[in-house]
Image 1 (cartoon, one colour):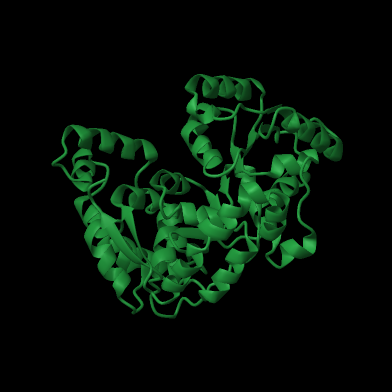
Image 2 (cartoon, one colour):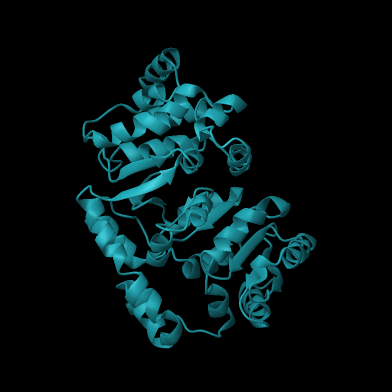
Length: 388
């Protein structure tokens, strides 16, 4: 799956129809906008959570303009407020898709539930719950919500409590929600579906002025976000264009992004590190036997050097340097490529040798997917901080 790197986030190049079809098999969907990307520069927990999403799609026309400026255009704007109604209409006749709405003010989620069920002609939204303000800090309330969701028989959870709260809540509790296979972070969409808040006119949304419409509706709440906090974003994008953008990323986050460590494994390493502060993160991972030493060395030391180069390298070379493929495996893949019309990474994934998330990471960071024959693309200077 191709993606576009904007600052420290890889946004998937997907059309709505393709995403909806993929969600038949489940997944976690986040929809970044400018506000998200600004928060992701400072909030390491939010960044950790983003690395766990299965699909990251563009919520903002502004990000589409930015992707074009950076030379790798996003295919389509898929905001949460567009994706959610498209989702329930797409699966309206699929009885296995049963939605739980979590969010909005008291009574709003229930009104949204009634409206949606009237539109689709069945009890598709099986339950709705409006949590109290600050519920995410109350573990007892969170556990009650989990129990309500599990008892609802829902298979889809749509959470609309604002970013980064909704994304963090989904990733913290997803493993406890046994029946849920699709997780959607949808922001203010529940209010829209209930009819409590009006969306911007289509023409404003179409040219990237939805933020202005929302600002005019709620100036006291939103003026700082749009007129102050979002401004640094454009300077950071310019730095990325000039290859001057620099951000620190912890090695644990990086290995999660590449699909090589799980969130639980990172937590275990951090706990061990607290008890043994002289040990490096990578040393603990190697001691646990989760990754080869050469894989850790690649991400901690070789990766920054590669990103500074501007010449093309075959993807197999990166995977070899990372200890993820050996010479025999690479030779076998190259031989099969001559017989089938598949990319190197596709064959490696099909054989079970490399995870899809790892291939996506390599392509996003090292290669220009819009022109596979071009030079290796290094859109950002990456500083790794081993001491998490």
